Length: 206
Image (cartoon, rainbow, N blue to C red):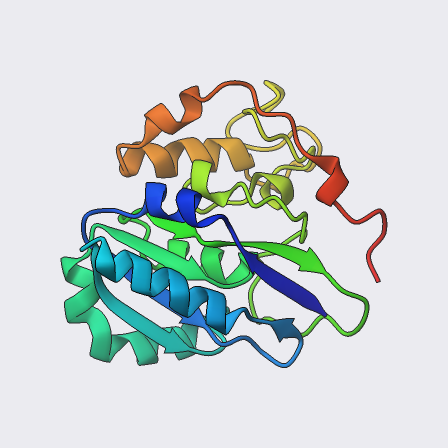
């Protein structure tokens, strides 16, 4: 199992755009979703005047499901500047891929719990590291998209866009750069060197 824990309210408010749509995943049976906390943060976003819509569904890690469900909410999404996703890391990556031309931010960190981990039809992965980096990398996880799990940029060993560790794997950091360039958010790569907090990382997966 796994648990999603909202980031601090201050951090969430700082990344919300002037026109924000919140997408809340109710989670599958293998995920604990903090419904009360998410509702409280949505109220604060509404009081701040930036919330223009809130969508709650389940299994946003399933692209076919979310595509069908979001069709009736596209008027809200088209009017948004930012999508804020309350879900595990897989759900955030699914939404970021679907709306690659719009900033998509994670409102939660994901932590592992012992037990069955559930099934997703996607190749996306969430390392459940407890310190989600997706907000600085355009919705592409540097922990799982990079063979070396680098959080401060590529190693320099990639050739022709391919990872030096796995020749069949696209360099995760080149993907991140292209996504941020498309979103005009390359300045987010200029943050101070970030040290990964391994205290939140599980020593072993169940």
